[in-house]
Length: 118
Length: 114
Image (cartoon, rainbow over all chains, first blue to last red; front, side, top):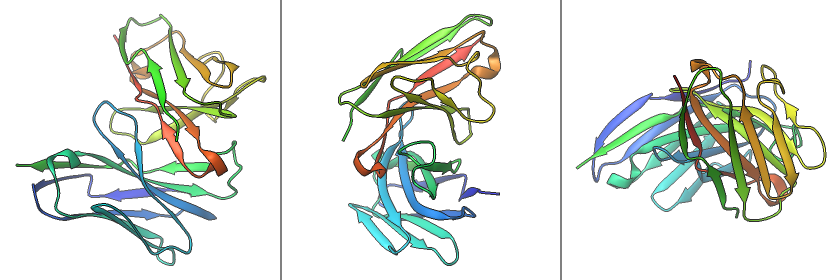
């Protein structure tokens, strides 16, 4: 069964600290993996998109890693800020890309809720 | 990129009534997608809104419950019909970007059914 599991479910850290969020998946065949940030009351916003051949991708203070062999990804947040408080959603896209249209078959994790405290 | 707006942003509705959610995109797109996000759950694709043809629904979702319109390449509506408290969710409109790799979401419509 195609699944995306995220951990931890929730996390509280102090401002300025680093943290790492985990995503394990069993999706096959794999097309790409995305991390989204969803602020409360808003739609998800893309942070990174990683294909099979990419191991690391950064977007400012966000760094995503992908190990396609173990089917694991992580999102590392450096020097956290209060504005980082949000849910972080891991999404794995199953090939072929044209499933259901241009988006492919997207399998969403439940997200990790991050709270950054002053 | 694509900028997506949704109306209403939130609503509280009574059981048995219907609500129509509007989605407007700032550029023409071939396909628009409707998602549901129930409390504490993952996003679930409801249907793909095709311009000029009927929407394509995912397993577990039917047209009678979630009728969709797509009158042009920048606009779509999703109606939640005969609502029950189980329909309380956030409903999100989404579009795929050029080459199908980037995905954009609207701000969502938070629906509460009492």
